[in-house]
Image (cartoon, rainbow, N blue to C red):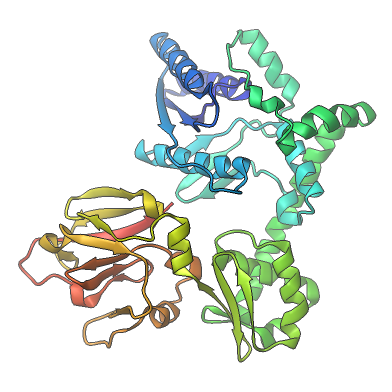
Amino acid sequence: MVAYSGGRDSTALLHATLAAAESLGIGVVALHVHHGLHAEADDWLTHCAATCRRWARAGRPLEFEARRLEERPARGESVEAWARRARYRALREMALEHGVDLVLLAHHRRDQAETFLLQALRGAGVDGLAAMPRLARREGVSWARPWLERPREAIDAYVKRHRLRHIDDASNDDPRFARNRLRANVWPALMGAFPDAEASLADAARRAHDGSDALADWAVVDTPAVSDGDALDVARWQTLAFARRSNVLRAWLRERLGRAPPASLVERLMRELPDRMTGRWPAAQGELRCHRGLLRYDVDVATVAASLGASSTIAIDLSHVGEHRVDAWRGSFVVRRVPAGGIASRLAQSLELRARCAGDRFQSGAGRPPRSLKLQFQAAGVAAWDRIGPVVVGAGTIVYVPGLGLDARAVALAGRSRVAIDWRAD
């Protein structure tokens, strides 16, 4: 599959991929995301669809798939960051719907050099300076950038040689966006003074990527030594050298926050944790709490639910096999028939989804006592961010909790039609 915007780079990549696919006897799907941010977006979609139809009629093994984004960035949210997250989520969904796990992206060496420079200007660490990987596996999909080491001039030459028609996005000239300012005002002067800047910066990004991988390997070694269940043991953490202490803290926070932690938070914890066996620090959509030398991250589920627009109760029928999308919670339930376990199909017809409540209790197995969700999550070693998702309620009692699974009290009796449900977050 090829992420196809209709622009010069993605048009060239799609054309080249089709040429290779024909010789290999495989099909290609062009994936287009309609962001709804520009007046020309409908025209871009029309252009992409028409190009794919024309190439398909010429005998090329090509399908076209498009997705319109219905959501919009929140007030104060970076439009660039929102569009990037929403685009990758839509591309992933379309790829998996087609049963494909490889998506090709058209980024080239100039893009890599620009990303490295922007990250450096933002004060990024090694992870940020690593810029874009050539190949990455995330959430069941491999994202590949086959042209990441190719100069932009080579792509321009390819487009001219094959007379490819493409879209010129006027927003690429909008000075409100940092990358556009870099391209218009900084890049020409940089290349004039340092003609090899593109290749040198891309090489620096590759070396930063190697360094990032090495640090990740160290974190895998150090994390078990400083962990106590889902908590970080501050005393054991302090025995590490400063650099390793900082590295494992970043890795521990990334796992719990679901994204790279802000540098300011890491710096504050590095400064304050050694002298405070008890304390609290706001973090993402929750709070870091240190008690008796153990640091934990607690998600404020009500805040998360409100940010997702899922603060109210949602009625849902999960009695039918297949995938049931829940946009408010940004995820899906997958339902399948099972011969044993599961919940009764009749119960699954009338379920409700809601955020966690303070008094919620979950029974993890027959004969075991119901316990609070917090204790059950800790006992099961469920990372804080993996606890986000709607609690499923049926007939007034908890049926299913993401991260924990089916409540033992909801298991269907023998002889009844039953289904199993699983939550998959985006």
